[in-house]
Length: 184
Image (cartoon, rainbow, N blue to C red; front, side, top):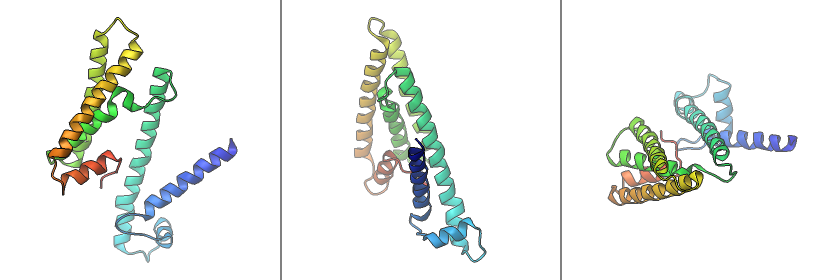
């Protein structure tokens, strides 16, 4: 067990280091160390890139990952299935549809996140409302089937938005968002 924990910590440190040095403005390991140790000879531009862009983005990704892990654990306990994921209730597809709609309408990043949250919430509410009406079958099975159906419907909506989006500005943003990118 000790070896597994050590490997996990090592992989986390490597991932954080990679996220800190890679990007449009490349930093090498020597520059990274100088930034972390707050040495005075570091150019202001590098300080801004590291402390105001990369560190907040890394922290946001860490907290988001922890929240997703907590949600996944909750799902696994609720469905008594270790292989369950947020796709089961259509949350991912609903959030993706909300974010895609906000990007298509040219809204700011705050609204994109808000629409993503509301999209996921609306799909879960829809799954819950439909499942409440169907009482003759196993409630967990009904929940899963309705979630998959609404998730598929949202996936079709995402495909429609992708065909309507401008291929040079909106489509790359939609694709980046759906692939899990943390926007600047």
